[in-house]
Length: 197
Image (cartoon, rainbow, N blue to C red; front, side, top):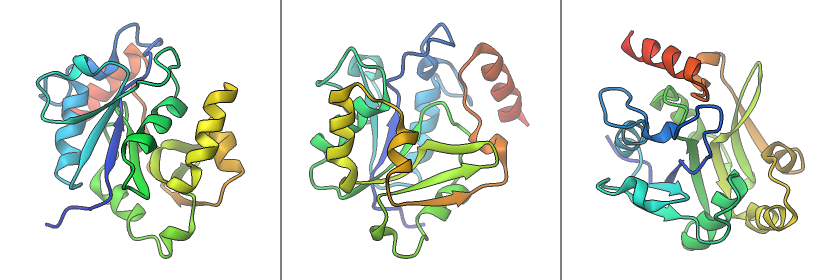
């Protein structure tokens, strides 16, 4: 099976304030950590998989390329991650991003992104469910690099605001649970049960 050549970046630099511990480091799916589970399964789909993190040392021993935040260590928001990613992956015109806490986004969903016609004409391609959009599951173009960096400088971190002003193609997904976020201890318990099914 050919691997997708667009790079995939796994966002794992959040504060995990609702979990009260780093959710990226929780055991999941028979792996030592959720981050490892996500990385290994994405590595079977994408030619290159990176992990975006505040502290690269958390992922020592991983066979992964880490994009460590060296711009705004104090900002726990995706805008900081994007600023670092576009700055460090200079050769890439677009990237596929996924949050570490969405372990049920499978290849069938990812395939939908990579078959969008005229994909290069969009600033972003994002998943949408009946409950709304999911900004950390999609493709972002370098056309948004300056806007994202300006947002970071202005202290504006809401990706939904960015997408409202951008040329976005939305992929509608009916399965709400596929986009389930593991944000709280209750979410984690639910995810563990779902993963075992």
